[in-house]
Amino acid sequence: MLAQRRLADIARERGRTIEAGLLISNPPYGERLDAYDLGEIYEALAAACRRFRGWRAGFLVGSPILEEVFARTIGRPRIKKPLANANLRAYFYLYEL
Image (cartoon, rainbow, N blue to C red; front, side, top):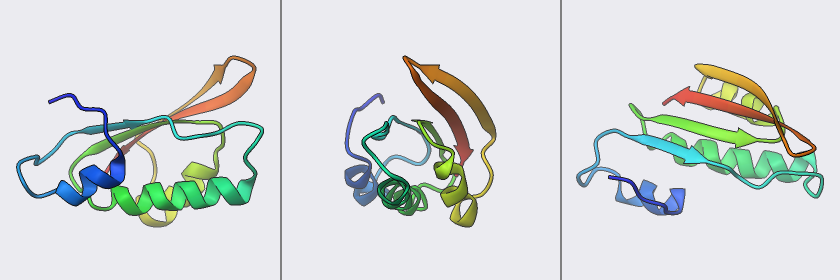
C-alpha cells in the first residue's frame, strides 16, 4: 500500500496490519538549518524508525549528520550515495531497520 503520511502517525499504528515496508523521507535541510536543528530533526527520525524493525528507510538529506545520529541507535546505512540537489550537496541513505 502506498501512502503519504507523517512518520509519527504511522509509528503509532504499527502492529495493526502492516508488518514490513519502506519508508522514504526528504526531511527539511538547507542553508537555513544549523547543525543543532538538524540533530534534533534526525534524533526524532531515529526514534520513530526504531518502531519499524524489519523495515527499510531511505532519506534524502543535505548533511552527513544523519549518518552520525543513526549510527548511535540504528546502525550503518546499507547504501550511502552523495548527490547534488540544485546547488546544494545532498546524500541518500538507505537503512535496514
